[in-house]
Length: 178
Image 1 (cartoon, rainbow, N blue to C red):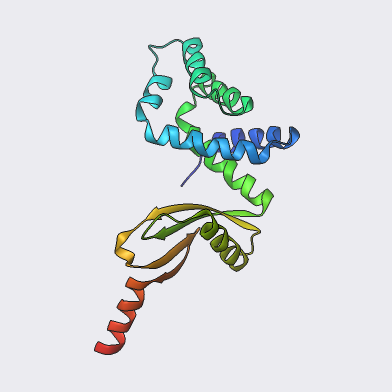
Image 2: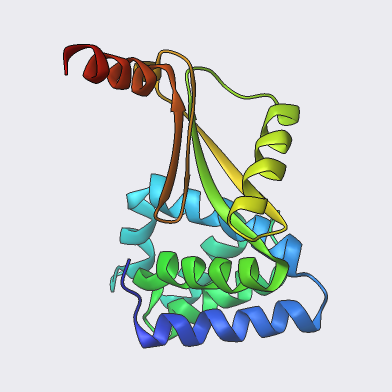
């Protein structure tokens, strides 16, 4: 995803602030939740970007909506509203998470499976695949894909590790048919 220069600057400033306050892990986790809120609620963007609603009212809404997240995140969101850049919030979060991941030796991974993985399974996958990509750990998002039939497919950045039954059957079919 292409990110604007402004989004990168806001992310860098927020990253530095989180590091100064020793809240990098907490802010990263909270930002992941904030991103989900923005991605799943398009009306939130419309409200916060509307010229009909006063800036103070928008800030008040942000304070009420995000009471459980770190205060520096709420302040950053308010700043984006002030600067009329709230439409870039997802890009800011993505840039922040990328910086935080690099600093912590973590990578984001999507694990496709036929069922929801237990925390122990996620931890084993994280340990095994983190070494393959030169990271300390993986932040795993589990997605259900019944077409796999069994096994898992792991996507880390642009790398895909496919150990699914469907892929193995397709390979066997190619071998048998020629």
